[in-house]
Length: 119
Image 1 (cartoon, rainbow, N blue to C red):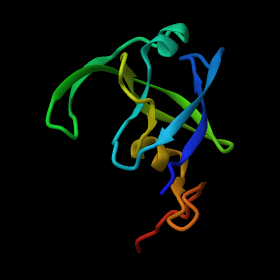
Image 2: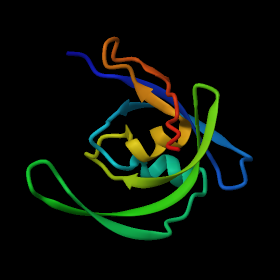
Image 3: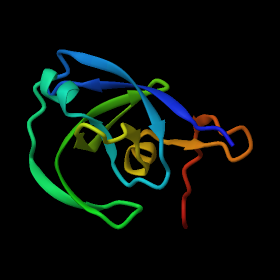
Image 4: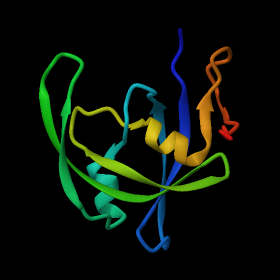
């Protein structure tokens, strides 16, 4: 079984600059994790901290913020985690839903999702 990756453009707060990053799509991760050094280059400032439990039970504390991300011609504001050395950079579910994207269960590729309307 292969992994799904996405080319994601991460924007600076005023959309004046951006960095293109290749992220592992992780539908088990709520938030998007991007290298702290990339976020600092874009002058994205931490807005708080959150605690995360790893798959092996360890607790991590990381800075978080919000910024605009772009993928497959879709643009959305999302919560991002400042990934530190040893952390994997991932595109999480919160960003995927904001961008209107999903992983195709058959091809394992990223695709535009259909939104649900409950009436």
